[in-house]
Length: 82
Image (cartoon, rainbow, N blue to C red):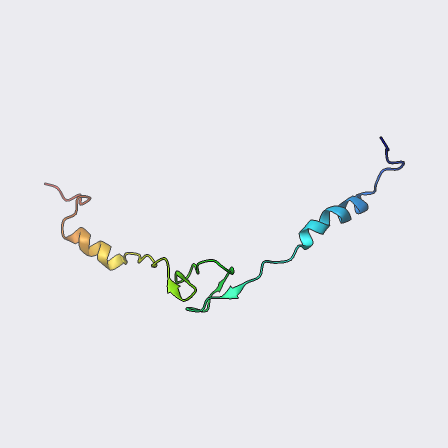
C-alpha cells in the first residue's frame, strides 16, 4: 500500500476541504399567487398555493381580543371562584 512521502500542509488540507463549501445555492422561484420566494416544485409556505391551486389553507391565529372575550364569559381557567 503506498504511503505519502511527506506530510501535507494545513493549507493544502484546508483547500481540499473547502471545496464542499463552494457548492451552488438551490434555485429559487417566485410564487405565482403571492410572489414570495420558494423552492421549485414545492408548496408556498406563505400562502399554501402550488401551481395556481390552493393546497394547504393557511391556519388563522386567534387574536388577543377573542381570547380575552372568551375569558370574560366565564371560561374554565377563570380563578374567580367563590
